[in-house]
View 1 (cartoon, rainbow, N blue to C red):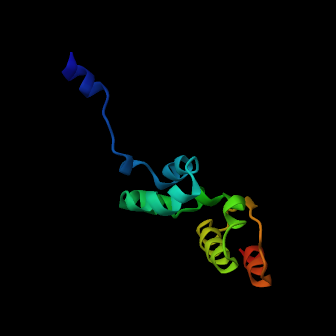
View 2 (cartoon, one colour):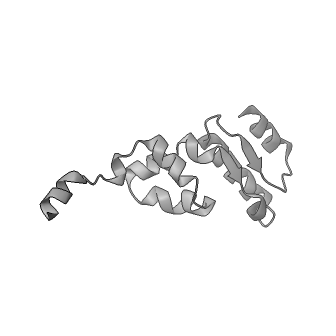
Length: 107
């Protein structure tokens, strides 16, 4: 009976999921995990987390109130670029330079 069950339930690797599906799954993780942990798991996860599906909504409001303006600008540039134009919602505070507003508007 065990042999039958093994044949009936073929297990597949996470690496076989299409990047868009992984990206949707990864949206449930924290920003810190998506930026620091997921890219180091394997190549397919790194590719998926750099895709636009993980970055349609960016919420860094809590973090942005505690960071330096230049750090905030760099992080926003990275995350907005990753969204590839699919950004729908941005929650952030403490923007101080006209250049970052221009960057956000253009992307």
